[in-house]
Image 1 (cartoon, rainbow, N blue to C red):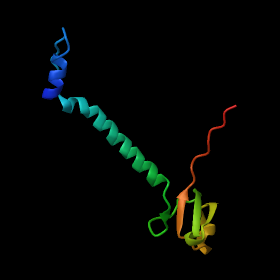
Image 2 (spheres, helix red, strand yellow):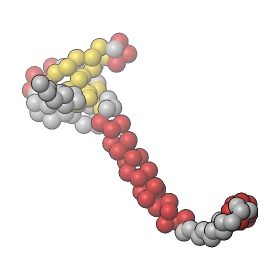
Image 3 (cartoon, helix red, strand yellow):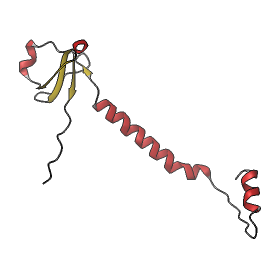
Image 4 (cartoon, one colour):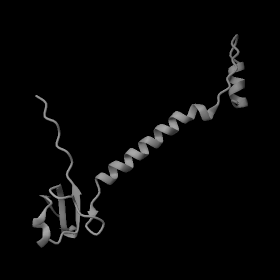
Length: 104
């Protein structure tokens, strides 16, 4: 059902009379679904770009990562996680993004 004001505007158009009845749930459902999809994708991207504490989990063996052991000093290094890390005391890590595709 449309508002009385909208109904008056429609009916005041000379020579034209329209009746509009919309099921707003049906109209808004695709928009609501799309917003939900965008929110999920946004959360996934934020999670992929966050610093992960080593107390939460460690990188996989041979995973390319950024690491830091002194975030307050902004010391960040790229590395390939592996057995050589046993002597390191790093606090956070982040997966490296995939490199861009080269097109020629």
